Length: 344
Image (tube, rainbow, N blue to C red):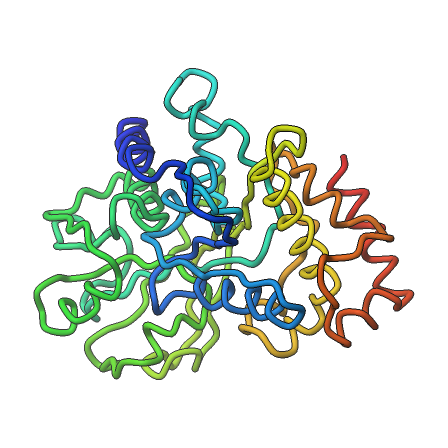
């Protein structure tokens, strides 16, 4: 990724938001209305609602806006971010005061699931190299899709004929109408954008992404045949990990920090004790979640660790399934292993 791209996006994100004197709320920043992030956010909010904790699920442009929102936006305790965004923030942190400002105080809550990098293109475009000279939509500038698309094309040295900075839900109708040739979309499969619209499999397909230079940053993945109606064959591609971020609140500072830290601890506990329920009733991506698969170089917040204590009680009456999960021996073993890994 070009450092200028990251700095420009950070500059945009840092220029918005800010604290105000409004009453205390709980918020999680997610993504667009048809993305996986917003569904994961709603699943987490449902856990809170079962025991009387209201969590607002906030739409956003995506990863970078979410990251900076956790850092700067009042009443925003949580945000979901792509792991490659975290990696490159760390890469530039040492020598860039603007990146240092954005990163300061932001902490890991939990790693979540892999997000597949979808590139939907015209059928005559066979692979990533064939995107050269084409008209491609790469996502909004403060989104994770934008940063990932930029990085991938830089690594592969693919130069588009024209790049459109628009969201995937805006890009899809443009592709279907012939206005563009392809677009990037980073989302956990199955992405509802591709399941809610009829896509002609004779005209469009997902590009395989298997180029060796990308494997230093991304994880090999596969979207199985039939995941989408237009996809008869499995597609090998790459993925990033979605990570839930929070802020390192200081309970000695003021009432807002105390309330926010309590919120983080409560939801930390609810997610751990309710993980089995999330895997059963939530988005299919919950089935692949490993809460201990931490990205390197990032610290877990102290408020998250507080919620992992065996004797921690959320400030509500947990749902019956969560309460029974906390008493289960296998769940206690998992919690103990998770706590050890997060404290390393």
